[in-house]
Length: 429
Image 1 (spheres, rainbow, N blue to C red):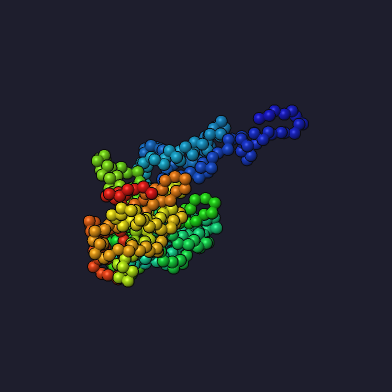
Image 2 (tube, rainbow, N blue to C red):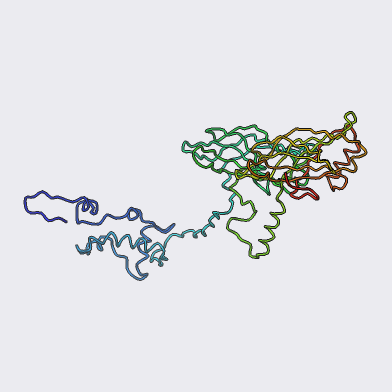
């Protein structure tokens, strides 16, 4: 402290003012806030904690007598020693007291803390609930998802509200190709969308092995959108032409692979199998084709209706798709037809029809080749996928061609899966 002469006014620097206790008495360092609020063992009163430091056979010492024997030099350390005693007794086991003590209930075992990476179902009440319904129409190969409303969503903005929207994905293979979303509703925790989103090109095989992931997110204009909660519905739970309604609590974000985040398989072989399975589930997309032999026009009418879940070929995560068709064998290469280009989409809708003048009896010797391409400016176009229909095809492709030949003047529509390789096809635009 700064010395002063008699008659001079005392001056204290700002450093000294911040380092001393301004209360009357000897100068002491300012104690931490935790010193004023000592923590005692759960269920242990303060006086018992203080007696824990004394040996069992030592007589109890009055507080006043002990305080009277303190020396002036111990004034600066008495409070610190009391605090040390309090915290030292926190982990000590109290000795037997001479007098009878009331029975204390046994301490409860520590509860297991929830895994931060795992999902706890108790949190669903804090994230909110979602009401929606699902309908699978096998005739049109469409899955209709009606998002009705949500209740009690978790606040995500500073005003205690949120700007929610719903996003749909089909698993496995979540990407922009099978992403659908609702509109965004502003400043509400109880949104009502009443909006129907439709997936086209859904086959019976998809209904067995795919899962619908429904996520609720909060939209932000100046930063990334925030995740609120999600739920997942295996499509095998749905019955054809039967609307099923759900009211489900939202969950935390679940790992796509089905394993907990951070968990690894012990056997390296299992990891290799999982990667192989994921590659086998990759698809190039679907295409809806209509066939009809017109007796009036004496020709085959080929309709390119739409595509779904196409593979992304551009850096922006989309494609600029168009479709080409050939009726082979085509020596003069006059059977080529091409649709218009649809910009920046993975689910284009064309609704274009082309006519091949040919006798009905000659169709048994022909093959229809349909390919989907991504249009690029200044470089060669990218091949997305294709399908071949004809007498030498297999499965649904053969059945579609056979039904067309069998049923004149009847328009038959079928969804077909695009493949990355076509036998005997020249994959160049």
